[in-house]
Image 1 (tube, one colour):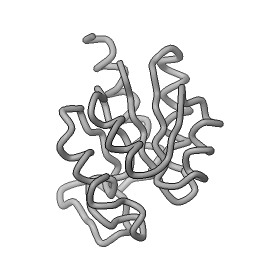
Image 2 (cartoon, helix red, strand yellow):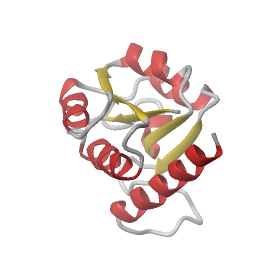
Image 3 (cartoon, helix red, strand yellow):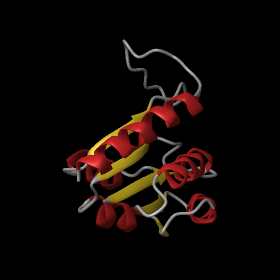
Length: 137
């Protein structure tokens, strides 16, 4: 199973996601895709199998991912202060992968009907879903 984790800015959410996945699924392939090199570096240090940064890395890795994880903004063009390009957002949204996205308060996006809770609780829920999907494979 190939899990792609996409993050930008400093890579803090991506780092947290990867650390938690590694605890539950130590052998799963995790590809960290940073919207910038700082985010990619943080995810590599967290235990990603491999990391890359930039638009092409997102397009390439989303094409055959089983699961794509990150903040909700990775599916919206120009989010994360412009780090998510239209092509990156399109790669996420058009991928056949299961998308597990964490709603964030910033970025001008609010998903109605979603309960507000700490990011770590969303990460725990996300990792539980990845474990469930891995067990089905």
